[in-house]
Length: 54
Image 1 (cartoon, rainbow, N blue to C red):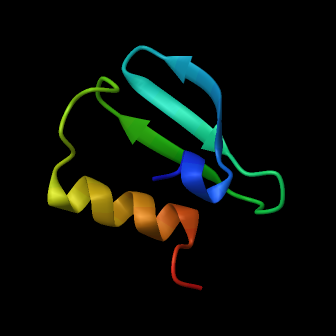
Image 2: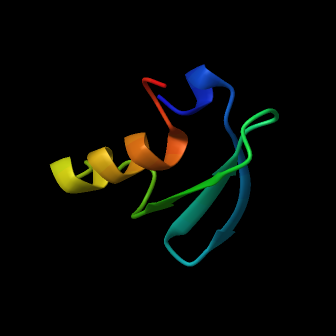
Image 3: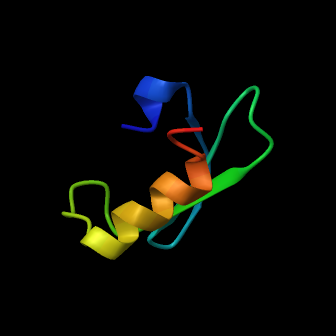
């Protein structure tokens, strides 16, 4: 979902991955393993951090 919008993986530390966007001035932090299912609250947080819908 993030990569489809142009976000790229910038760095990882433990189970946290941080994504950056070439034109948006924010960083999105995603916890958990890449294949884990995300909780609804985590998905909501990602949408807010990525400024989806704006």
